[in-house]
Image 1 (tube, helix red, strand yellow):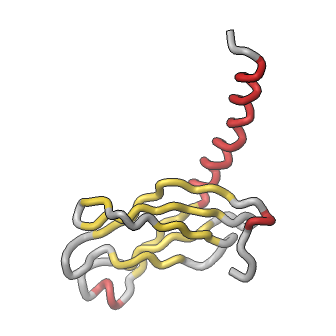
Image 2 (cartoon, helix red, strand yellow; image 1 turned 45 degrees about the horizontal axis):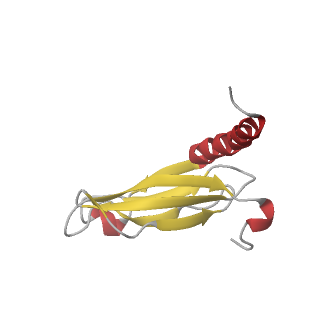
Image 3 (cartoon, one colour; image 1 turned 30 degrees about the vertical axis):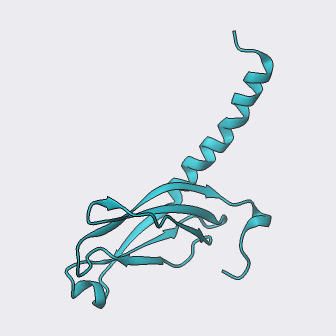
Length: 115
C-alpha cells in the first residue's frame, strides 16, 4: 500500500509530466534551403515554438559526425516565434544534427521580455 505522503508526491508529478509532453509537442524542427548550407549539400536546421501563448525552454544536444558534442544548448523560444537557427546539417568536415533533450513551458513571470 502507498502511504498518503508518497501518493500526494506522485500526484504532484503528473501535471509536470503532461506539461513536458505538451512542451515537446510545441517544438517544431525546421529545415531551410540556406545558400551557405546548400553549397555544402545540406540544409539550415532550426527550431521554433508553435504554441501561441507560452514560451518554451528547450535543451538541445548537438551531434557532429555521429558523436554527441559537449555543447548542449538552451534556448527560450517565444510563443509562435521565429525560427531559432542552429546550423547547417552538413559542414565541410561532415554531418551534424541536433536532438531535443528536454522542453518545458516557462511560467509567465519567467518568460523573457522583448523576445
